[in-house]
Image (cartoon, rainbow, N blue to C red; front, side, top):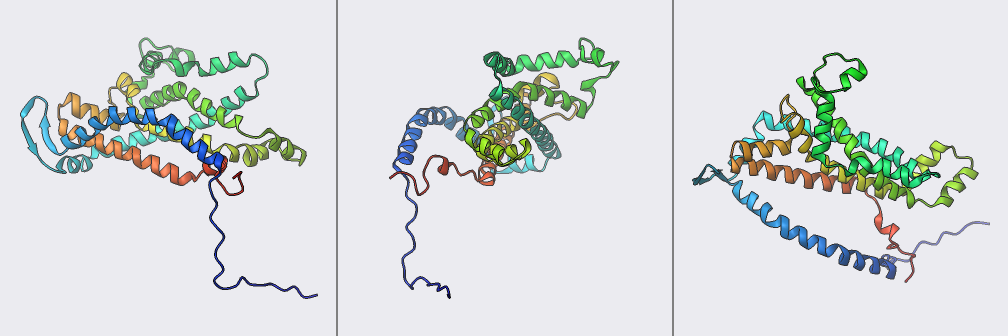
Length: 317
């Protein structure tokens, strides 16, 4: 018997695009209503400073000489981008961001698994893990600075490092900064990933176990794919936060030993050197880099959140 394949007739209209289900529309409206107050407050609080910074970045302006303000156009941006120190600070910021986010993602996922699977004293375990995140960043930075200090610190004596001066070199100073940042903010990452683990259907893991999948295979093919949205949120939030790091650098090194970041450069130009125009130009460049990072992450991950909300075809109409 010969199979006959019938081609669709010419001019046949294409299948209609998938419509958004009623549930999807309701969740979208609810999301807009819930986020509207926060968006309005953020616009009111940030719109004027942002516009004012953009405006002042076009002038040669020092706060010590307010009457001597000259329009220079994009000259401040050219000065910043042509300065080797700016690109050195970009590299420092990138290294701190990349290392902290990568380590926090791994440790945070492990802690999230512990909190998710804890049977006994679950509340105590979660409280102990999340405790560092409740400490003010400046206080945490001072604590880590004193711990690694050559005179008053205890790290050298504990590990038999003698008189090793942690804050005398670039990479040793950055090591302390990175460690303090990881200790402080890993609980935040673990909390976001814990929310993602709670959304993974348990029957999928059970079915994979019945099919003979190992623990690693279940993790790689079941758990992680079903919590991509939580991973995206955790990585995005922490990347944006780490890219703007200031507190730890200010407290521990004050930008010395080539540990200055973009946020600290903005502070130094604006506050220390009172070069408002140049400082605002660096601040605008920092803001644009944050926007670029957000766009790249969202486009790169391509997480299909619409499917999770039931906005694909086949949902209830």
